[in-house]
Length: 225
Image 1 (cartoon, rainbow, N blue to C red):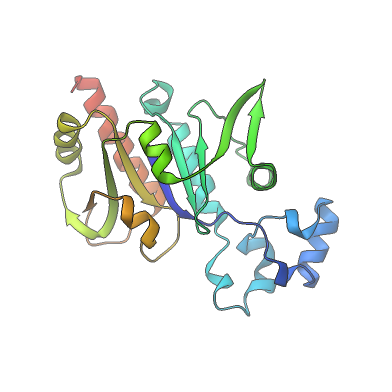
Image 2: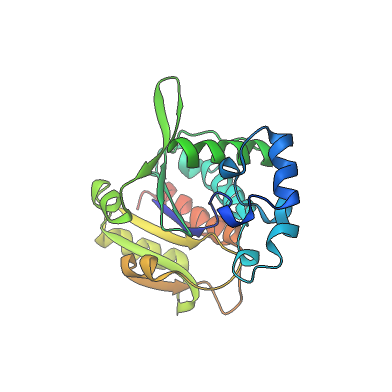
């Protein structure tokens, strides 16, 4: 399982609803400001004066991360139980591995807006993405025995050897990767992590870290370990 932690997935806060750029896009998108997702690229003029908000709105990181996981052979072969999106506002969403997301960014934004408003995404009477009660409940429901965080603050390890050793002790593990541009995991996420390891002293993008994990897991799977 993958946990995309502290993802920038939230609706535009009320204090920005009357900003000219928000009102403009509200008319273009034919949606109320309260139904629009906070996106840094679209609404930077509205958030640049707010010290807190201008660090948010990087929905593109989540989009690339989800596509990286869902496009992998590991996912296609049914080796991924699911993906948990943990948002910056401490909401949790479960993404079914069978989900096929829009590759076009603006279509993805529209889908995420629908998710945040309606709390689920369904297709052919099957729920593909749904809001969860809590991270703890979902980990227990999926019988996750060990949660590993990836951060440069962690202990440096050979990733493939580490995953192999961990899988020998726990049949189901979860990898936590930050879905934010900089900083560290929130306290809520840290509470659920059993171990934190590092790929090195440099700062890597979310997609790169996911690629490394997926690649090593695929190699281990091929060897039948």
